[in-house]
Every structure is written in C-alpha cells, then in structure tokens.
Amino acid sequence: MAALIEAINIKRKSVFEFENAPYACLDAEISSPTARGGQTLVRLKMRNLLTSAVFEKSFKAGDRFKEPDLVLVPASYLYSDKDGSHFLDQDSYETLTLAPETIGNALDLLIEGAMLQLHKYNGNPIGLQLPIFVDLDVAYTEPGVRGDSSSGSVTKSARLETGLEIRVPLFIKQGEKVRVTTETREFASRA
Image (cartoon, rainbow, N blue to C red; front, side, top):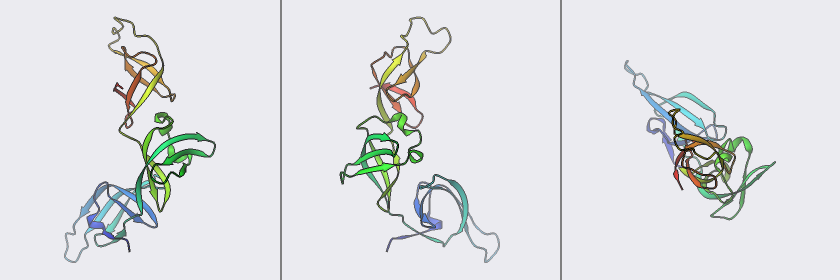
C-alpha cells in the first residue's frame, strides 16, 4: 500500500493524491485553534497536475493523502503533429504523446532531440519539465550598428529557430547559438 501523508506534513512543493488526481502544493498555511477542543486546520494552495487548475482548500491536520504514483522520466523531443507532441522515453524507448493543451507554449523552446523530463502519473504522461536553459540558433536578427545605444537600450530583437522572439545584445549575429532561460524566456548567454 502506498504511504500516507498527513495534511499537517504537506509542505511547499510536496506532491499528494486527492480525489484520485495528483496535486502539487504551492503554499501551506497552518492555523491553530484558539479555543480548547478546536481542530488545527491546514489551508493548502494546490495545483492539479492533470488540469493545471489552482485552488485553495482547508483540511483537518489529521487528514491523510496517498502518495501519487508520479515519476519523472528522461525523454527527448521527437516532433509535433495534429495528434500532439511526441517524445521518446529514454528508459523504455517507447514513444509518448502529449496533447497540445498539455504542452502549452513549451514548443517555443523545443527542437528535435532536446532532452527534458516527462511527468508520468500511473504510467501515463501528464506533463513535462523543461531544463533550466536551452540552446537555440538565431534564425534572424538585424545587424547591430555601432553607436546604436542612443535609445538607452543595448539590445535588439532576434527570432530563434523555433519562432520565439527574444531580446539579445547587439553583438549577437544571425546563425549564432544563444542560451535562453526557459522560465523567463530571456537571453542568458552565448552558447
């Protein structure tokens, strides 16, 4: 039997199963009673890992939750089509497919062969976790003009091989590889 977690022990970034779905705790707040015999309550801000819905709910401190059958598996991005985005599980070598609504705008950062982590719940893929940085080619950018810093901005727009547009320093040229932070989608460095 899976281990049980008491509500009082759920902390930020913990995962647990509630109403047969996996959840991640975004914030936990414990309120102790002021009167005798009152119950300690735990207010959780939680995200459903299947639907990405976020909401808050209060539980009694002794309420118990199962640990979800949630694993991260290494995978590489293969391609996308009308059926979704396809990934190769690096452990089992099976092809896993995620629906477009599950991927969201992560395709702006994915090129063929990109390595990442896939979330699997009860053996089925439910989401992905991008690496902290990705290296992408600059498909197009205007040449930087010396002395073009009069506007106070020393960056220019660049379109990357995936179609993502970011701001880069003036010295970056078309055809160069740049490192992009996946969380903020900003230029980090040359790759």
